[in-house]
Image 1 (cartoon, rainbow, N blue to C red):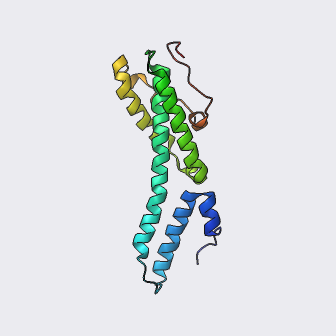
Image 2 (cartoon, one colour):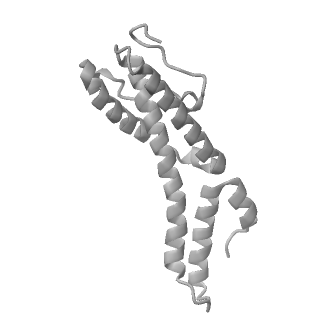
Length: 162
């Protein structure tokens, strides 16, 4: 017997990611129960679950871009394009916050180490112009998740730039 859950409509409005995972589970249960409804339960469950996974990928992508540009702001000696990096951080913070507002359960699913590796790789590509190698960036994320999402937090430039 399956556990009772929050009413699907309430969950959908409060946490889209949690709703997709719950609905996929319920569709699989309905398929196991051999419902006579002419529905493709297995593929419906896969598609609904995939929608939730897409939300998670979107948040990871936004945070990787935040990390990329925060690392550039901290490590690059270049005076330009700092404003562009700041604008990118702000835009991706807003987008990540919007996604997390719609799906707050995603916060517990985020793997900051994995996201950092991606953002660090992006940053290294751009920092190569300044002769900054991957080995010069911290191997582990130097920022907290709270800092990544904080609109007012910025790293201090190692070169005294604003």
